[in-house]
Image (tube, rainbow, N blue to C red):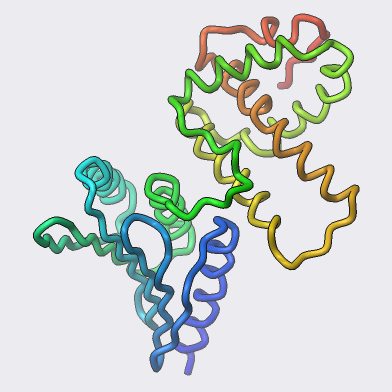
Amino acid sequence: MEGILEVVSIANAIENLLKIEGLSFQRIKKKETIIFRNIKIGNDFSIEIAPFAVSLEILLTDQKDIKNMQKLLNKFTKKYENLDFSILEKESSINFRLLIHPFKISTFKEVFFDLSFEFQEDVSPFVLGVVTEKPEEFLLNQYKIWKSIPDEEKSRVIEQILIMKESYFRSVKTQSGIIKKLNQIKKGIASNFGKDIEYTPKETDQNLTEFYLLDFAATLRAIELGLIKLKLCDLFEDFKLRREK
């Protein structure tokens, strides 16, 4: 009975993650096991939660995707002692099975978000701002956009951008990490749109504003860390920016 309760608890947490990513899925219960299937990551993706372990299976057919998956596996096995994997090769595809045992939600989240970021196919149409270009190219383009905004408008949003930079990007320290975090946040915001949820105009406007200011917050973080060849004074030359400790 204890095992079943744990399975249900873990399954509910995983279902929330799938919803945050805006992914459709089918939830199936088989005795003491819960399976999520028909998830649009790669060519096929499923998650199985059993009393003693959680496994993720992803099917890939594109050679570029397969190479990227092999790189991720190398990263996973070095970083997580509680993760094993197996590979089943077919004629024109490879099925990768990742087993997390003993189960840790922190390991699952990081592995799941890496797979989702790299191979997700079912992206909400609302997420027009998801970054697909190279990190440095995107960040430099955001700088150019910021410079084109009238000073009066900059003054209205500068404080919010600084707060968002600290709230969302404080823990990331690389270009790719910033972009990964940016896309995750945008998908989380977008997953609330197009559903049977009532929003007041104020709430909707606030979410939309945050959605588009995230790009500038990410750019500020990259400049702050010296990840692109700009200085803080280049981005905020018209403002007296108090450097944070």
